[in-house]
Image 1: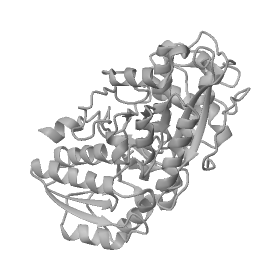
Image 2 (image 1 turned 135 degrees about the vertical axis):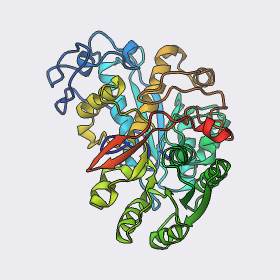
Image 3 (image 1 turned 180 degrees about the vertical axis):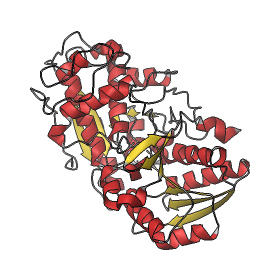
Image 4 (image 1 turned 60 degrees about the horizontal axis):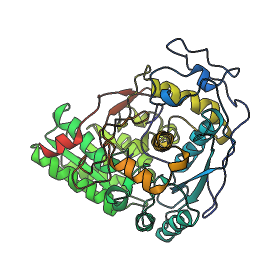
Length: 437
């Protein structure tokens, strides 16, 4: 589920429930660009556009105009549904990331054939009924597609499915997000995370005993059970430790895990469970390496726990090579357009940003006159090894992760936190191959 101090693939402006807003683009840069330009591009500062100093080789390169061009035509409406607030976790940076991406697209990329994207936002507030209401709003407002965020319940996806509206990307945390015929995910969610961390534990840490601590919530429980089946098939002894999704007792959970004498621990805890897990592990002197979902690498969490997080391993779902053109471009956009929203580049917003850019790339190929739900669905279903912004190429044939047909790119990378910085531990891990062999 789900980058940090350099990117986290899974977590957390508050949007009013049911309120839709049209995103306006800034008229000038709001922050200096300090990431060095590459491949002969212009030096990045406030005097030049992102387009003028963008690195070559980005997955967006073919869609870049020669000069930054603002879209001024009639809007093309795209929706986003996310849990911006809620008792079991709040993930507002995913909505913010969509806004940042849309600002850049409308200001410099001429929108879609001159048509700016109008972003309609809806906050589920950890409420199944509001998830449904958000979807109904999107259908009523005739959006071309919905970009997913984190919708714990995912009840609205069935409404989108019944009306043929694509649900694109975000972080899949509900069964419908992972299985619906109109859902297309560029993240493996907790299913991909547990497999990627388990693969690393078995193949690199040579773990024989693994404890999986998980929050008691249907899809997360399902992820833990998937991990157990696969890891046991690879010869590991697995202990499952469940905790409440809200106000979890991590002292008891870690003590229970410790009794199994694990060689590694996988923590599938909710956003609110990250800090107590890290602090408790430090307090009781827990020795086995602990692997967390990327949500736990959010800056606000790492800042709260200090050195208690040192040595922690996270799933990333990204290539952190500093020369990666998509990474460089993302940092440029985040610095230039993110300041007005207080956006932090090192957040799970990267996953939502990726989804918006991937959808935009598809809209450009379709053209504004054909940017309708049916055409988008057809294009997504036909996708094979399609470039994914700052992520693994995606294929949406329903076979990328057995049992979770909507997941188009479940592949994982892992990183470790040392002295406040995430360093990449692995290249792309093929979790489907690990799960089936």
